[in-house]
Length: 440
Image (cartoon, rainbow, N blue to C red; front, side, top):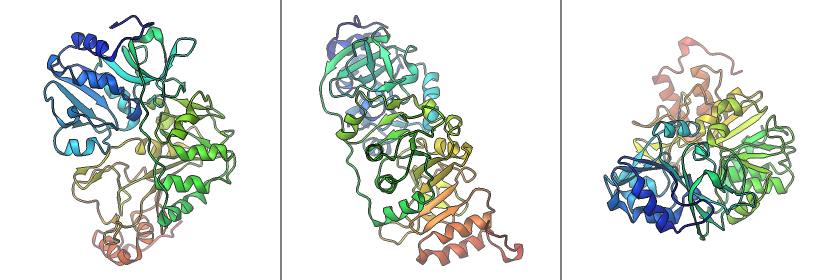
């Protein structure tokens, strides 16, 4: 597919007019995650829905609201989410869009099976050698470079980054020039409970460890406590502001990493303008495709890998429901299971799953005898390593069911522990007739 001579930018209107003329019925299009979305191109795509039939746009974590997300063009242009955001969550609940569950590492494989006809992506301006970059993204779009036509929206405010998210002008079917600011996610200030949870984690992180940090109050608290560590490495699906603090403070050097030594590896970035300026033209940071970054086998090659992820609820078996509240979908699987498995494979690796012990009013325990009816297991009991609340760390791997239950009850809120102990007995997890084993 060639829409325009690659060395001359076109208008978004002309690009989408040419694309729509070539779209077959039931075509699949790919749009990168979050700020990888080409805003003006999708505006023009929506403006031409009357010329389309059965077109599906595949994307994770959409950050901009659009009519087609809510089913406004059913049968013409529809959205398939692979990870729900605050925008697509209510749209999915109302039946406006579709949702496909998958581990983040496997999304490129599943998208390839759908034989996409094009990737529509935001990009940085080309460098003097004719290379664009996908900016703050690589994710599931980068694996299609050279395999599927790319139509780029070049934004002068998009950072130019390094990694396998770069493509030459010869691999571009068409491009346009625009200018608008990237969406920023403010740094969330951690509360007292967040800092307590972070403290339980940080005391177990050795110097020279390679860490995975996400976004939110607990990762921010963890990073603030890691400032005095030495020679940390970073290998993470999501690069966020706290990593910048650790680099500038000297805690992150990457000297002990087994691969990409001295470099930070990520598959997308989301945060403040400070973060976007940090990654701009900075070859310290490599944006690789998610099927590489999140591959548990590659993660496991790093010694002392530390994975930190959040969950919504955990039961006394150690099952983590991290994407649903009962039957209500909240987000998606993302890379939680990818990194939990990777930490398992790592020599000296540790996988932490964090949550506050109760809901904000203290009435409901987030550690429960069984998961809520209809809840989806994101990380299974055999993969979960350590559960962390403000009351401590429950180590689960290699433990009996009774030991698991006892460890989890010990980190539940004190007002819920007696109830959990009774439920553990009723479920047969803890029986006097069976006797007990040492906790080690």
